[in-house]
Image (cartoon, rainbow, N blue to C red; front, side, top):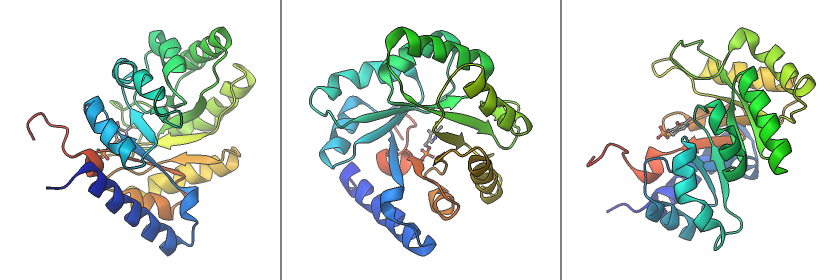
Length: 224
Ligand SMILES: *Cc1c(COP(=O)(O)O)cnc(C)c1O
């Protein structure tokens, strides 16, 4: 039987190998363990195996699992990686260390207000819809550069990086390259890109954060 600890060890090895191949320091790549739809017990198992950074795509699920774990694991870091409703902005600011899904002006306004009200300052990444897919969250690619400027100039937000989820059937490499170029132009140090199926490609193209779910926690399909 494969355990979460085994899977984590294997992913860390693969990250190290991808970094070696790309001539990069593995310390420059953070593994975000995506624990969505997995119980708190799975997170606890990962914490016991030394994993400290987690990703959740729903604020409510994050609230139900993580605050209780912070007391015993002060180094725990939580990233919100899913589409964020404006009315959840304050909850997200309160529960998260990093919000990766900033993708529209109204959300920027809500996050700015929540940051002001709470005094909490989570890291912020702009999610770019690099495939311009209508059903997907993220600022359209042609508007991304202007949106980053708007976040800073109009809403006073400090951005730390960019995030993308390439189209499922496409070669992800051009999408990762586009995001890396945009981050360089915008002077943003962090790049969250790459998931279970493509994180090695993302590392080759500069990812600083890879978001890996199923390869660590197994299938999220109930009973699967
Ligand atoms: C679920 C999810 C992941 C993890 O995907 P896997 O294919 O399970 O590794 C990464 N990023 C986002 C935004 C997700 O929602």
